[in-house]
Amino acid sequence: MAGNSYGTLFKLTTFGESHGEALGGIIDGCPPGIELDFEAIQLEMIRRKPGQSAIVTQRKEADEVQFLSGIFEGKTTGTPIGFIIPNTNQKSNDYSHIEAAFRPSHADFTYEKKYGIRDYRGGGRSSARETASRVVAGAIAKQILSDIKIYAFVSSVGDIFIDKPYQDLDFSKIESNPVRCPDETTAAKMEELIRSIRKEGDTIGGTITCVIQNVPIGLGEPVFDKLHAELGKAMLSINAVKGFEFGSGFCGARMKGSEHNDLFNEDGTTQSNLSGGIQGGISNGMDIYFRIAFKPVATIMQKQSTIDKEGNLVDLEGKGRHDPCVVPRAVPIVEAMAAIVLADFYLLQKTYN
Image (cartoon, rainbow, N blue to C red; front, side):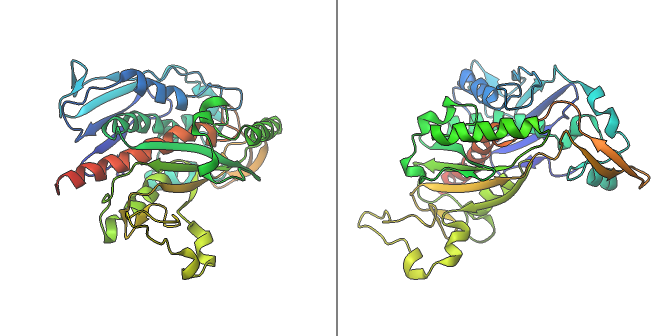
């Protein structure tokens, strides 16, 4: 299986399955001499881990990171950083009913057809549990980018949206509720919707908005390695993501150039920021902001028609522990992937200086 690595200079390779012994990763290219804040790394893992509230999957995992290499006396050595995250609360029997059947809109069918074999326990490698390794790398990337601030938050669940621009939101309130929405009134409505959807045995989708501040001018490479192109690839690699837009996004397609252009101030900043902090694929020093769409979780606790390995029509009903809405737990994953992208471009930019 190819495609298990991301990055050029700051490079992450992940391994492991949802119900295997452990997940893990190797981070190559991390600069030496960085004094790591291990509490901050573990805090990011706690933000992503299952079982953290009543509106997410109730699988109980400590998600404690064990570092194996690349760190000496609390500092990075410049050699590959190896780590594992043990799995401790698998319930593989919950998935015996899909050993020979394919869940609709899941990776079961495509994995089986592509490889001729699949680990059906929890989705195996296709499980969103793989993203735990990304959060470790992202937490380290954030410590490389100490001056850059990355804030992701839930901006919609179903048809409930925050109706304020991000500039009017208090990012310190993102962690104040289980939905991770900084607008408390909207968060309460989102939580109520997720609870009602869960009672129906169904799932619901939503969006996450990410804002990146204090980005230096010059990150990103023109043509094929544009900064927004790499951010898009990174976000679209996250499980359940179906859409990505930055800056004005699809709304910009309805505007005239005279409305959309970001006019300059004398200091090089711009009066508006419909470009989303990126022009010509290169950061311009303004806030980078983008939005990601997540589909409803594919596994639902309702009976559905599907096919088995022999092509027979069968009825299938979800079992086990699953998120009724993935977006609250995806917030730290979005931040992690944004940090990995920026760290990669930051280190590349340093080669020019």
